[in-house]
Image (cartoon, rainbow, N blue to C red; front, side):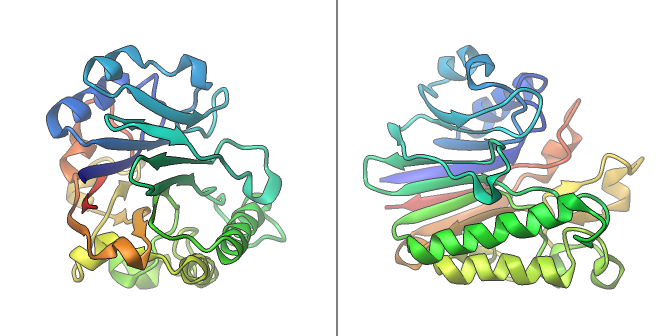
Length: 262
C-alpha cells in the first residue's frame, strides 16, 4: 500500500471549509489530519469532503476550541484518544488503517506567551501535556505508527527564523525542546520531514501579526510528521506547502506532506 498523508492546523474547519476542499482537490492526499477544527464532530462540514472521495472520518471535537480530525479515502477505524494532562480538550485522536498502521493526530497546547509555569498556567499545561505524552509512549511503545500534528514546538535551530532571538519565546525555549525530544525518545519516534529534508530552514507557520509574512519570512516549523523506525524508510517525498499561506483567508499554518510505501 502506498499512501500520501498530510497534516494541517486549519484554524476552524467550518470557516475554512473552502480551503480544505481546495487542498483535497488540488493535492489529493489519501489522508488529511486536521487540528484546531474548532467544531463539534457533528458540525464538521463533511459533504464536500465526501464528494471528493474522503468517505472515512475519525474525529474528536468541541465547540469553538481545539478539535482534531482524520479524513481518509482509505478505510480507517477509530483507535481511541488520550486526554493528556486531563485538560478536557479534544487534542488527540488515533485511527488505524487496514494494514495495521496506526495514525496519531495531536494538537499540543500552544503554551501562552510567557515561558514560565509559575506565572503562566498555559505554559505549565503544555509541559504537562508533553510529559504525559512521553509517559504514554514509554508505556505503550508504538510500532508501525505515524504521529502527526501541530506540536507547537520548533525544535531545531533551522526550524526558526532566528535561533538566538527565539530562545526565550514560547515554542523554541530549551525546556520545550527538551520535553519535545523526550516524547520522541520515549516512542523512538523519527522525524520524517527531516529524514527527507535534512538541511536548511523549514517553516510551517507564519504569524498573522506580520503585515507581509512572505517578505518578512519570520517562520517556525511547528507542524510535524513522525514515524516509528520500522516504517521510517518507507517514507519519502516530504514537502511543506508554503504557497497555501498566501491563499485567501488562510490559516497561519500550512500543510505538511509525506508519502509512505507500506
